[in-house]
Length: 277
View 1 (cartoon, rainbow, N blue to C red):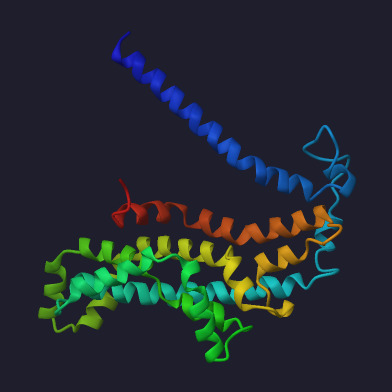
View 2: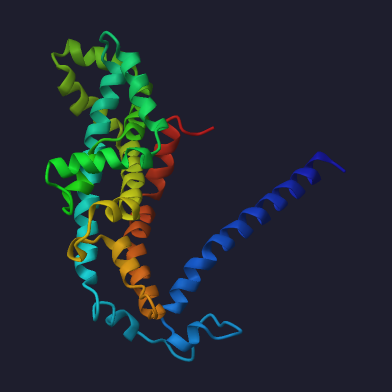
């Protein structure tokens, strides 16, 4: 068997596995979408069908009949936008400092900064809760936004990009009279747009889908984010699954739209950040 035939067989097998994996991951989303247009009896029908006898659009109009879904959605928007903007800014600033500014103990400080990534989030929950309680921020959206304004992962990611920026470019900016902040804003930051877009998507997805943190800090249903709101829509004895699936479909849309719009920049940013193999 020639090497060309072996290569064709290997690529065909590889593509088959990738397509099978993609279909496997899409099945839950397709089932969620189809269930959002069914009646409650059709959801539990056996054998299951992709769609019912007719599309029931009323499931989407009934989302806010028992729960303030719009408030949940807006709370998630507020928290996600704040966290994305502040975390990207702090990560880009710290990443530039660790990559391009020389000062005593820089590498040791960065190593200690990275060490925080090794500590599981659940280990710090009690201390973070006590700190937020001391500041009077428990049961407010600030308890979700302020701790997430900085990120060791984001700093590492931005530093990996800024290391690739030629030092000659920074030195030429100094010769032209630019201070470090001006060099960062006018020279390095515009070059980091793909990496910033990548970090923004990571940050938005993590914040939008976060269930554990709001569960710890929030106890007022009016301040719930979407993950908590969706969990609250599941009743103790009965659940309107078609309406819940409709609410879940709407909750997925912002993340899906953000990724589709920035897909090309996302891939380029990952490659430029030194995260590829």
